[in-house]
Image (cartoon, rainbow, N blue to C red):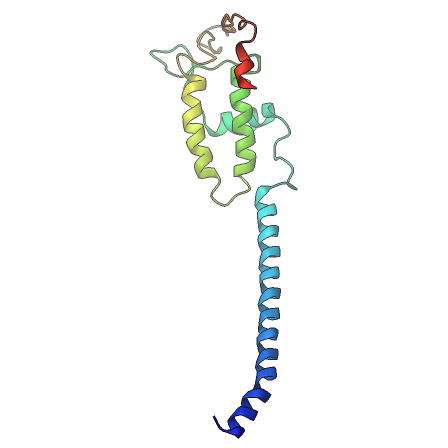
Length: 169
C-alpha cells in the first residue's frame, strides 16, 4: 500500500463512518414511524375507542339479527327451526346471542371480520333454533296458533365431595 492510498483511506474513514451513522439514524427513525403507524392501525382495528353500534343484545337481536337472518318458524309441517318470542327468558339463548352480538360488534370493525363471524353464526343458529335448543318447548304465535313459552327444566347436579377439587390447586 502506498503512502497516498494510506492517507486517503484514513481521511475517508471518518466520512464513511459519518455516512453510515446518518444512515442508521435514518433507518431507526423509519422503524419508529412504522411501529407507531402499526400501533395506530392495531388500535383502530381493535375498536377499543369505537362504541358499539347497538346498545344492548335485545336491540341487536330485534333490529339486526332477526330481520337479517329470518328463519321459518312455527307449527306448519315438519319445521326444523324453533323460536320463542320471549327469547330473553332462556339463559342459554341469551348467552349465545350475547356472544354473537359481541363478536359481531368486533367483526364489523375489521375488513374481513364478518367472514369468521358468519361461520360462528352458521354454527350457533342450528343450536339455538334446533330440536334440542333452548326454544324446543316453545311455539311461535300468529295466525297458526297461540304463543307458548316453556323454559326447559334445569339439569340436576350434585355437589362434588369435599376436597374433590384440591388437585386443581
